Amino acid sequence: MYSRIFLTGGTSYIGGTILDTLITKCHEYDITVLLRNIVKGDYDSFDIISEAASQANVVVHNGNSDHEGSIKALIASLLRRSSPSFLVHLGGTKIIADWRDPTCIGKLNPKVWSDVSDIEAINSLPDNALHRNVDKIIQAAAAAHGDRLNPAIVCPPDIYGSGWGLGRTQSIYMPEFLNEIKVGAPFYVVEGTNTRSWVHTEDLMTEASQLDIAKAAGKILKKHGLIQQEELKQVSIDQVDTMIKSRHYPSIGRHMFAANSRSKAERAPKLLGYEPKAPSIWETMEADLLAGNASKAM
Image (cartoon, rainbow, N blue to C red; front, side, top):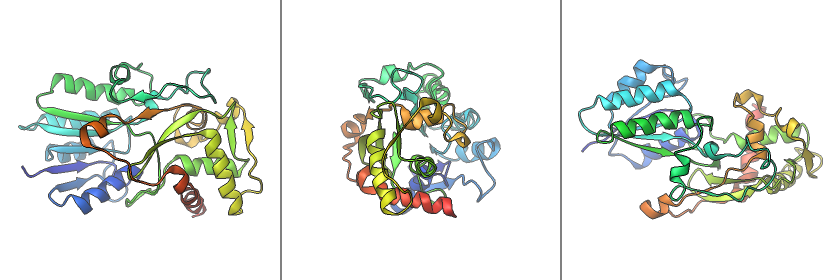
């Protein structure tokens, strides 16, 4: 059957990379894209979203993991189709981050979440977990309409490497970390052993602690004359809570720089034969930091 794909978030970091991949490698698909600032359409354009989704049998939803109105419009449109359809929604591992647990801030949490053995626990997370609001809407639709709607929630960890899209091509973490370093120093909270999982835009999964990232970033930024000293600075939890206010997420600084978010992808190797091949976070960090510095200078 000839497949029609509707992709949202086509100018976002991940969505743009997906769009590039679809266009260059999936010539058999008819692709419709919601592009912010290029055509009239955003996540509140429910009529546009509904019309495009109703014409597609596959929807790939990127860019805003918490927008309830757009996901409801997409699901309603797919359910109006006479044949079964597929919904791929981009969530994220913010849902498992421990930033609300004061005993874990700045310290290593031994828990590593599996997308196989921990799936029941992930599906039972409290309603105040980040992204949980939209995940519940999708899960409810799957339970009620499993014969007509085949959804998948993809939860990548923090992402590094350059994107390939028409819009934003850099992650959030590296440019924001750079901004905070340039007004102070490479930093960590408490012990700095809080650890996050990372994945390259092309595929590689790894882990890195805030302390190790700060050490590596300090060396790179001093080498390029962007900071005077590479020595690390321990900052308080109160100070990290003042960071990145422009993102409008609750305690986003604490989440990004002081919390753990550790996961392992077991489902993809088991079902899809996934084998990571991309460069490590340490191999791309210099390029990511310099790209973030260049974008801020523009």
